[in-house]
Length: 473
Image 1 (tube, rainbow, N blue to C red):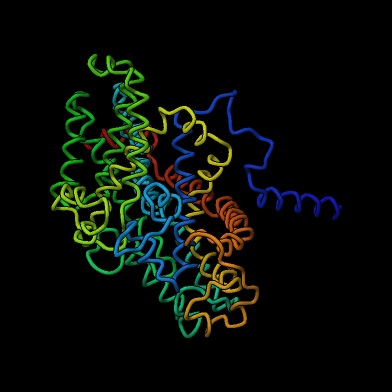
Image 2: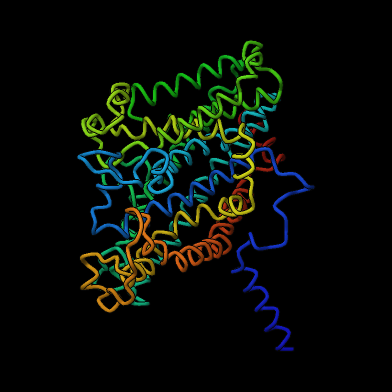
């Protein structure tokens, strides 16, 4: 009857919107987490750091947040608690998080192919890389198409002002969206902005796709090499991208591949004896790497000019080791910071347990959609809530005047850590996580299934492979 149907529909709706970390279902299978679960948790926590980074900058824009928060502690006589090395990572660690994403992607994308190479399964290797490369573009870009289309609709259908100047009408908005997308999705273009105007945070996705191609190419190129030769080849590519070409982002991907190769070698008990003999140093070295991750992850990022870094207290000596090829010095230091964080997180027990917590793993499951939706929510709901509690911006007087200073809060606390800044997150954080969870269920997961389904429809069957081979002969 209709009551049963209504009850079932309500149950399905609640299943979609209920955050999965509140579910009774355990994150563990057969009582155990998978070997790299801590890396999943690290990815999730990094996604949260990106969220916090953008909110800090947006809310404090009228107080020159870009300059104050992204310059180093003590630069031009400005001393803020939020910019102290280490503290800075948790307040303004978005760039560190992105570097971590890139190294993690190199690790994750290469682990299965490297395992197949080590097992001598070259046919399966070809199948794996072919499938992954076919699905990669769809997996990355379909969610962007969906979320940016919703941004077009915000003003023209719902009348909600965002962070972009709307077109005169909905048709013009759709046309601009199409023009932006067709350029943005072509990763080999040489001009224009590296993002789509409806969501500037998408700048990293073309880098992610190009980095994926680097990994798949390296995997196939080194697939017939000895393990030792493969390590040297991976190291040579890291050196090339960082010290010869301005390719720091791709050095991060290759570093992730090297770490994955190292871990697989360690699991097979095939590390050199001189390295295994140093195992007693694992804990002190891991803690040192964690320390360096926080220090290097706090690198100033406001300007790409090396002179700014040299004038920042504590960074003069470090500025002397930046490779000439690196255009923006921060990526050189973040390269090392991300490597140190990933290497230490799996070797320090309490840190590994933290990244394996249900909440961190939950953040990982929704991390891609959290990355894509936190900006639109910030520019709409967030902008209004910040204006209401007193964090005003110049254009709010003309765009949302009725929200400005509706409920001003005291700005008690250090810069970027004020009481008035935390209050809006009572609403913003749960709402953002909820939207990211829903978007994962209705956009991201279907995109994954669609790309896998499409590949299965295009994939040649064994009989077709045989006929194709006969035709070539």
